[in-house]
Image 1 (spheres, helix red, strand yellow):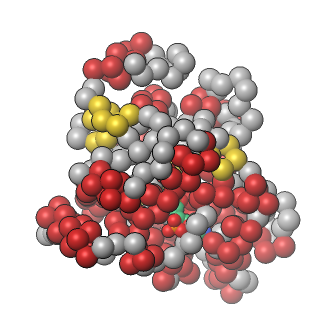
Image 2 (cartoon, helix red, strand yellow):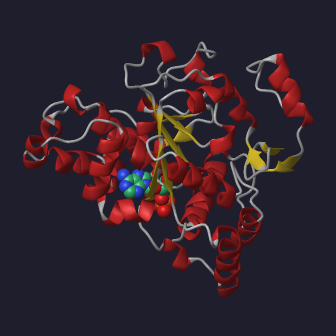
Length: 326
Ligand code: A3P
């Protein structure tokens, strides 16, 4: 029986019990809700009340969420921490981005956990408030759809995203000694069937992709590989989207470069809080697991010819003709 210690309203608990389920990649089962495999934690977010000034960082797991959270936070709140390059007190030098930009699915965000030390309470967040979520576009809380808040979505090529997810899940499994690690082949079969947190990847990506085409002022669609290849340009685009365009003085004064440096993989990975801290969600995930290689193309070190062919075919079948490609 699913239960998160009374954290759900009765009607949510009832819904949880009624949904089809499958074994997930870790300690919890996944539930099939409107064609997406969601972790039970999802339901917590459905009651979220958005404000028009909110900024939502949306993604599938392992698509560059941590990086985008850092960039969006540093960009939208840049005037609070000047000059960025010399400010030792900048929150991103002392906190993991997931603590500064909490997931909507985080139980503690709503003040349910008296022992919470890692997360701010909703009422303490200053505007613009920034949140992360892995929820598919159609399933986002109604208040996000109905308010003027903005969504920045990051997506990553499924080859690298899969390898990143496999490492991440196995790191958690081995560090918590919960279950045996998942073999690459077993994880791959689940991935291509869409059975992983918030999968399948194609519907998740296409939901946000279409929304970004229909309502470009509401949803900005980014790709991890493009963000890596052209960080400066993409950060400028992101600032414009968030209605905080960089001025010419800021550009010539190196503010964008300072933000990029602050949020760079090399810098973030070496911070004490990201080397030894923990606290992500309730599972006590160690922050270091969010910083592995930070590269594009690592999949080629793991994929067999069968896997390459199979995943390419599934991408063609499900994304072909949509205009979204990698
Ligand atoms: P790898 O496992 O391929 O290294 P998420 O943040 O969505 O969980 O995604 C994690 C992936 O983003 C990991 O990929 C991680 O190394 C990478 N990553 C984390 N911080 C990054 C940064 N500042 N710049 C680039 N990539 C980063």
